[in-house]
Length: 159
Image (cartoon, rainbow, N blue to C red; front, side, top):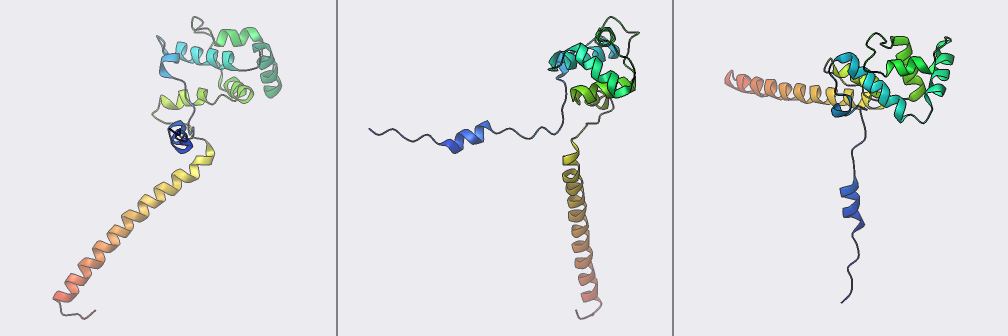
C-alpha cells in the first residue's frame, strides 16, 4: 500500500500564529505584593533576558543619558525589597532604549486599561475605525433615502 503524502498546508495552518501587536509581560511573571515590587520584577526580567550584562546595560544607559549609571543602581531598581529605589522616567527610557524591551511601557499602560501598539499597526487600527464609521454612515444614508422615497411617494412626488 502506498503512503499518503503529508499535507504541508495543514501543518502551516496549525503552526500559524498572529502577529505580535503588543509586547507584554505575563501577569504571573510580574505578580507582586505592591506596584513597586511589580515594576522591580519587570525590570529584573528585562535585565535578565537581555543579551547584554547589567554592566554593559548600565554603560549604554550612561552614554544615552550622559550621566553615570552603575550596575549596582540597576540591581537596586530590580530589587523588590528596595522600594526607595524606583527608576526615574528618564532612566526607564534609557533602559528601554538599550534593551529594546517595550514590555516595560506596556506594564504602565495596562494600569490604565491601555495597550502599547507597534506604530506599524496604528494605520490599520485607524483604517478599521474609519471603515466602521463609513459603514455606519452608509446605513444611515440608506435609511434616510428609503424614508424619503416613502414620504415622496405618499405626497405624490414622482421620482
